[in-house]
Length: 104
Image 1 (cartoon, rainbow, N blue to C red):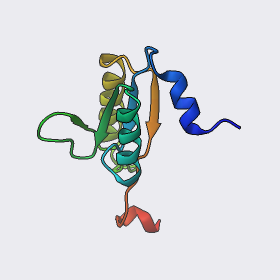
Image 2 (cartoon, one colour; image 1 turned 45 degrees about the vertical axis):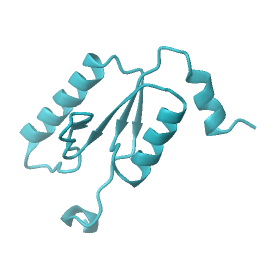
Image 3 (cartoon, one colour; image 1 turned 90 degrees about the vertical axis):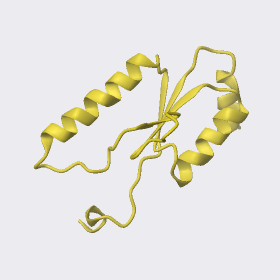
Image 4 (cartoon, helix red, strand yellow; image 1 turned 135 degrees about the vertical axis):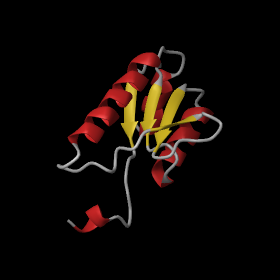
């Protein structure tokens, strides 16, 4: 049986570069740690980003039907990150807890 860790080993040494959406959250932090241990290059995003620029600010959790301009801007930024960094794989760990949208 193949495990997720075995599958990640296949990507070592390839031209893989992973985009981790939600890279500073509970799950995303574990994903980026595994990528680092496996020497797999990645780019991480989070809602606020980081002051040192290692985490790119990208808010994908504030979407609603009344603000399509904000949605379009987030999508354009996501595509720019994808193209600029030559991303070959995306892992989404995006989530939000305790927002008004949790109860809809």
